[in-house]
Image: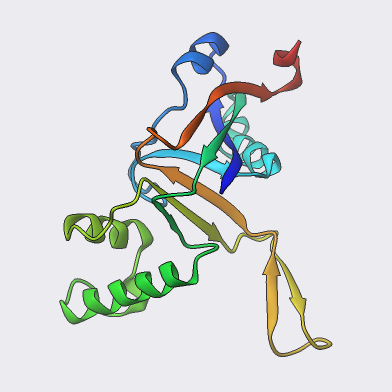
Length: 180
């Protein structure tokens, strides 16, 4: 699967540098999926919202760069691959039995992924995951109660290894004044 992907970056008036050297790795503590190159999957609105919350709120400008990612092979897809969700659940159960965590409430995603890497059971170059952000939409199968499906989940992709995944060009596409 090839997807359009967006990376939100601080605007340092260095578009040429961004387009030739980007994307840029996230190494901050608390990164949702561990260290890697973070992208928003397909929906640029999520990248814009992230920029507004992360940069504009502290008085900085931001840009968004776009590229395509090839997720055909080696993607730990927690959005579209049910077996990968089952695998993640099984790893959580192993961590509980090994007393690494007490229960599922202590199962923090980057810690689970790190555990898998340390145990040699994480052969993936990318991770794709969604969160239940406040803008999700619940669609019920029956009027007003019972089971429902969720749409408009924010989907992030963390690229751990760019080779064979990142498809050039990596181009700044936002804000519009950089497109002139």
